Amino acid sequence: MENHPLALPVGTTLDRFIKLKQDDFDFATGELSQLLRDIALAGKIVNREISRSGLMNIEGAFGSQNVQGEEQQKLDVIANIRFKRALKYGGEVCAIVSEEDEGIIDLNNPNSKYIVAIDPLDGSSNIDVNVSIGTIFSIYHRISEPGGEVTMEDVLQPGINQVAAGYLLYGSSNMLVYTTGKGATGFTYEPSLGEYFLSHQKITAPEGGNIYSINEGSYLSFEKPMVQFVEWCKEQKLTARYIGSLVADFHRNMLKGGIYIYPKTEKSPNGKLRLLYECNALAFIMEQAGGKASDGHQRIMEIKPTELHQRVPFYVGSKALVEKAESFERDKAVDLA
Ligand code: AHG
Ligand code: MN
Ligand code: MN
Image (cartoon, rainbow, N blue to C red):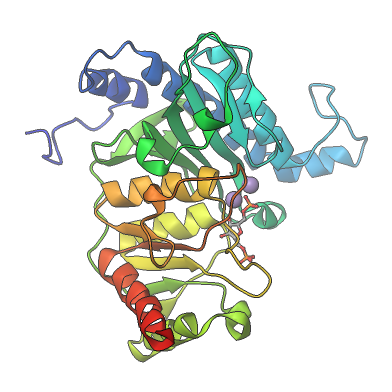
């Protein structure tokens, strides 16, 4: 019954879903459930700011302050503030690693047991042109004893330690997709009711697919295996789709079948995307949907981070396509031997 598409009725709210699923965890105390609700609340606020961003610019012509009397700021700064505020006052999180902050952000909740890594606004180059953007988050248990200072060891955990992960997509509709390790589930926001409703129960990524997503503008600086893989995609007559917002490209490929790659390039020798707050969360979700995520050689979630803002090459999507891309990388290793 659990996996039946009609197991939960139409109109199940995120809150109700979280409450029902809380019982899946031994010794659940409700803290993780509260944390997910805090993220959803911040997601609603950020979604509102994004939808009004065009208007804010018009208002901005009259002065540089918004309706709350605050200086107008770039949306990725606003999103960072909103998520930090929601997580601080929600009380379940002791520290955050954010793309927008250099060091660990201590939230002054020393007894809380969760750590969050977050990309508050992903796809920032698309903000001003009304194209889909997102938020990505990973949730970990702290390793050190509550009460003390959060340590580097607490935040530099491999993706396999994630307790939950998810993303918000601010697209033609606003969605929240998350996993706690028992499948990936999607919710769609109903603005007039102010609620996320269950819309994608038990998401399954197709085994193969016909989409490849890569910034081919960097083709001349790809390494040989990547050039060969892209050629292979063309020979197979796959279709090219690249929004330039990781969350949006990822979401489409997970639902329709395809591969997203941000490889090593001359400009970015370790790739561009960040392990802690971009790749790990999406790797967890993709694996939960039956797909795969690697750096071309190694499973993303098994990489032990050494730095907060560490970058990795990122290959994610349908299993068959990720394995195909990895096979080109392996052949290179053989060539060199
Ligand atoms: P962010 O806006 O959080 O810095 O992330 C941008 C990322 C990602 O969303 C996207 O897939 C990638 O940058 C696009 O990079 P290129 O323009 O180099 O293709
Ligand atoms: Mn990003
Ligand atoms: Mn960002």
